Length: 302
Image (cartoon, rainbow, N blue to C red):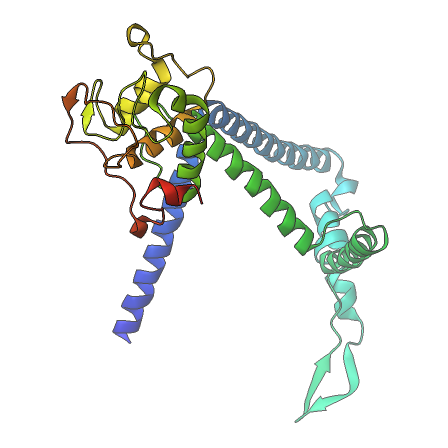
């Protein structure tokens, strides 16, 4: 028994801790404006509750004064008693004065009493019937309300739009400080297309070099890492004849073509330009078949 009580206590404490963590997490997720609105609403509700309490106290005080000044009112029920009899408990004395034994409902000498339904329960029961008719008409007859499946599909649609917006924002925020190699087949294929359209004129279609340097060897003028390539493509090197591409290509496209250029390392171009710059040995390796992307440029074109 003691073990069961200990286990129950641990479950309750963990549940309370989880609820506290969720509340604190929700509070941290709110910005300063939301917190201020939340506090203002709480203050307003507190003032309303205090005013209601004060109003009830004043009504009781005024009723007591009137009864003291008018003895004939002392015999009449107070407003609170009248309220309870009408909406909460009903007239209990009148109900008890009537015969409440139900004939034909006797079990082992025990008879069932036909107790009356309290007014508040009658109002609740009547209200549920009215709400049921309104609900049925709104969702079934008129068809204005969404079913559970329709609400789920709408939430999925909104979540997809939000996810797409987050992805677009993340891609737009790529720069030379946080860029990473895109080794996906789709990304490398897009990079190859961009390279052939914009870069092949100076570096040759196979990366062997022409006006621009050879991109298939390990010698680089401005660094051979993904961040170095991203920066050179984005900002250009005007004194070397390399134009900036930040106005023509998006950050995602610059990452794709930079990632594709890394796959040219170790290739054997038809005409290889002599190495330029310094040997770079700390760059990212070309994607392999194990990463889900093809290992050579000919496979990328497929």
